[in-house]
Length: 120
Length: 110
Image 1 (tube, one colour):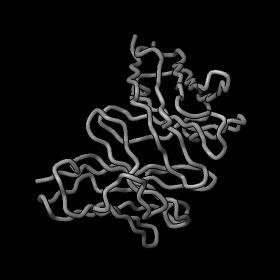
Image 2: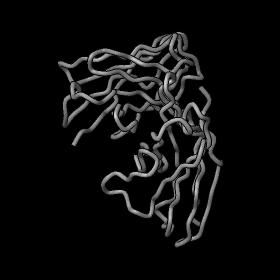
Image 3: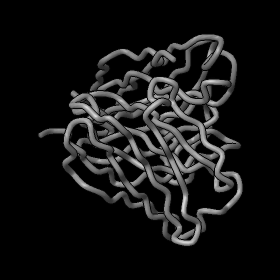
């Protein structure tokens, strides 16, 4: 059974780069047909898709965040990562990683989520 | 890329049914049969409940059902139980802007 776990700093200063890693267990990140995704949820708000990538390295980003987002993959460690640059308080959110089916367009499973606060 | 529109809240008594709508456009909900629904309890990660408009993953009770008409998808929870009280989000494939989520609906079991 595939499981995902986010890790990274819970506090980031304004203007710096937010960096998170998602570790995949119970399956290979190089499995075809799946995209490895980041989604965030502002406190008390809805879900916002950030972007995803295929194991080959092809990436797709939310247009509203595209200029600040980089998602990358390390197949040797079965991990993928998120970098969000020039953060502000508006980037304070719970960040989730999730597996996305490219064939059926669903997210499953999800990581437990990690709260990242942007504050000086 | 605008969020899909859901009612902020819905409610029903135990045993009753509640239906949540998810309205988009012909570029997302109306254009593809790739609508999925997620249940989120407070402090927890979302859980997949419905995919491809009306299909249930293994383990999801058949009290949960989905449908679509035009640019609006719907999730119905029949025989409401206390454990169904949660936030529900829809999402849809959207072509060149690949993915969009709904605004979310809080379901209360009275």
